[in-house]
Image (cartoon, rainbow, N blue to C red; front, side):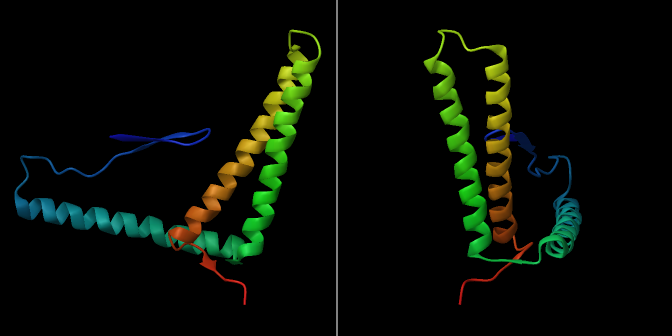
Length: 129
């Protein structure tokens, strides 16, 4: 089982490895079933995501990237400001930093998710004309 770590989420990926006791024909049959299962997930994602978001273009990515950059800058600026005062950062300042970081991470993950949706074919990408 492999592990994929993103900014805030750890997801586990389990790759198919046939049981050594299975005959080759049974292994092929099982792989076929797993391909059907994977396709069902792909089709569901494509239908639901495309209905929710329609087509996306560069402007969607630009707006999301700008919002993410602003959230990151606001979070780090608040951290720098908090460190300028007393030698210890207050619990209230830490709470504010945590909320700002969470906002940045959510936007960052949404950007990556949107990119993956295009890469996997769940969303149609409309390049600028």
